[in-house]
Length: 417
Image (cartoon, rainbow, N blue to C red; front, top):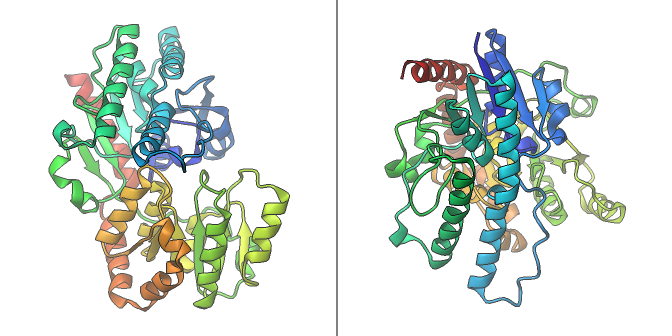
């Protein structure tokens, strides 16, 4: 029996990445010991999934980030710099990452060290702790890529790259480490020399093909069979009625205008909008405004099981979070993606490049493109067939069961080296 630590930021999306949580469950089902270490915010989700949860005082992940000041009066380059620096502070705050690393290292040195650490792509503390404890590290969620060519970076990217390298040097010096679990080059990131689990296909990353590294494994995924009955609200909708899933995940749910515009567009195309706004607090008056702006047949919910809803959906309109994008893909549903931050923009581009949906900007949404885009997808047989074909390709990758096997293989390789 092997002992695994899965370490993540305390956000629901960072438990998933398309299949990381189910990979942990697959390992446990094979008789291995699996513990998930994160902040208490995700305790309920993990214990409900049947995993041993170990709360951390600090994960190194700053969330929510400080409010973004008004950038409307700033020069464009300064506004971009502010956003980039804010993102860097989220995952590479020296004090926070140091505190999280110390907690993980102390826990490991007190006799409870695992055989392997599996980390989400932004958990710098997990990468540092794995080196300090001389443990193999695997990254779950993002592919490993070659270092960016500094000559091709924008000025703001070069400046932030220098800042991130300086922060990483401080952390490495503090713990006396070499940085074996970080990429070199202009923009450092968490990098496992052993294995990166990617819950998509290699073709999904066609745009980056020239920079992908050999330690990537592309395992795709398939729909899960829900363990419970559909909820009463879903049973009450006639089985023949087509649905539209509308969500911004768990982080960007304050954009209430998006929900109303998307729901109105779906309703005009005879779809029943399933609007999922997450659990973040919404002022009563704003929620009332949203309810008043939704079409009569819409359902407004905090959370849904995608695997109950998506088999009945003809369209998904969302932000491009990796977990949401993955769930829509494996169900073969066309999608409209309106990215709000970070990697969502790359996911939106991939959706468009794969011809399984459309990538819209916030400006497009304000200009009424949700309706025209949704109508185009519903009337395009090639997009619909492409979405079904990609779902079949995703299922061929083996999903979390194959990912669990690859983790065990990687552990054996690390023991033999």
